[in-house]
Amino acid sequence: MTLNKNGIVRDPEILSGTPVFRGTRVPFQALLDYLDGGQTLEEFLDDFPTVNRESAVLALEEAKTPVVMKLTSAKPLTPVLPQPTAVSLSSTKKSRRG
Image (cartoon, rainbow, N blue to C red; front, side, top):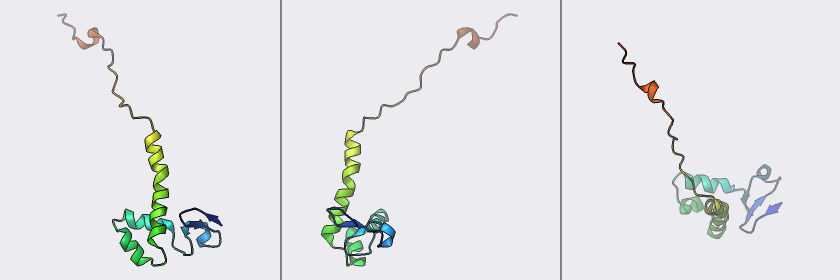
């Protein structure tokens, strides 16, 4: 069994190793799905009373850390502008012979 400080565990005997809140069979992904679907943390906690607020908040804080680290350490994006192409004047003028 793998245990994180936030109370999320992975145990092959529980939902085939899906990360769940410790002491429950509630997947951490369920919380993310609720929030992604526009529901609140309160709604999640009401629907999953075996998960306490502290565990849910700590899990979310730990999940955001890698994202924030990635964003703050990434190089700023440099816009790629199209390079002007060389155009021969002779190819742009029509022949005026007549």
